[in-house]
Length: 354
Image (cartoon, rainbow, N blue to C red; front, side):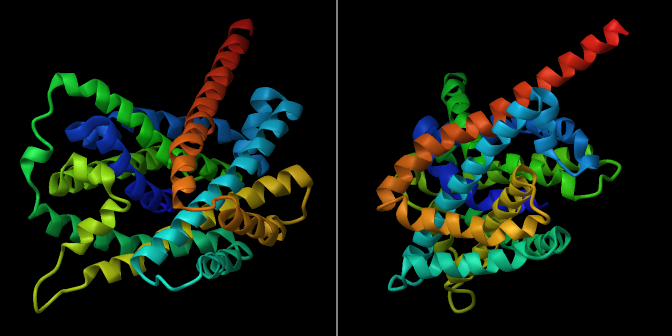
C-alpha cells in the first residue's frame, strides 16, 4: 500500500505528458502494456527478498546472487541512486508547489519543511509509517475517484479512440516511459527485511500492482480524453489542469486547492519510502546500530541535491526524462529481473546435481 501511494505522484505528473508525446491517442495504453513487467518485478522482488528472515531484504538478495563483495557494491550503487531520486523528486515537488500554490515562497523552505516531516517519520518505526500510509491511502482513494468521475463528464472520445493496430508500437514505446516513472518502487524491496512476512504477501503485492496500473490507465485515458494528446504533451502538470476545470458553480469551487493540499501526502509517502530505504541500506553497508541513525544525513543529502543540483525547471525536466528514466529502467527493472533469473537458474542446477 505504501508503494501504491508513493507511485501516484511521480506517475501522475510524468505519464500523461510523456506518453501522449510518444504515442498520441494510444498513450493511455502505456500502463496496460507495462502491467506484465510490473507484475514480474513484484514477483522478482519477492524472490530476491527471500532472505528477509536475516533482516536484509533486497540487499541480502543481492549478496546471495552475486556474493558478498559484488552484492554490497551493487547495494551501494542503489544507495547513491536512491539519494539522487530523492533529490529529483523533492525538487519537482517544490517547483510544482510554487507553481500551483504559493509563488512567493522560497523553494528551499518548501523542501526543508517536507524533509522535516520525513525525518520525524524516519526517526520512528517503519510500522508507524506504514499505518500512516494506510490512513493517507483512505484519504487519497476518495480524491482521485471524485476527480476522475467529474473529469469523465468532459471527456471527448475522439481524443482517445479508436486505437488502431499501427498505434501499438508507439504504445509499447510509451510503456518504457511508464516503467521509467515507476522504477522507484524497487526501493520497497530493501524494506522487506524490516517487516514480518505474512501468508499471501506475494498475491497481495500482485493485486496492488494491478490496481495501480489500472488506476493510472484510467487517469491517462480521461486526461488525454479531456485535452487531446497534443495539448497534454505540452502541459507542465496535466493533473492540475484537469482538476482546475472541475467544479460545481455555487457549490464546489476551487477544488484544485484541495487536491494540491492532499497531494502533499503522496509526496510525503514517496520521500518517506526513499529515506527509509536509504537508511536500511546505510545500516547494512556501514554497520550502524539502528537504521534511523542515518535519517538526518540521508535527508540532508537529498535536500542539498534538490536545491543545488538542478539550476532550473528545464534542467530538472531534462534530467528526469533522460537520466532518471533510464536509471529507473536499468536499476528498477533490468537488474532485479536478471538477478532473479540468475538465482532461479542456479537453484535448478543445484537440484539437478542432487
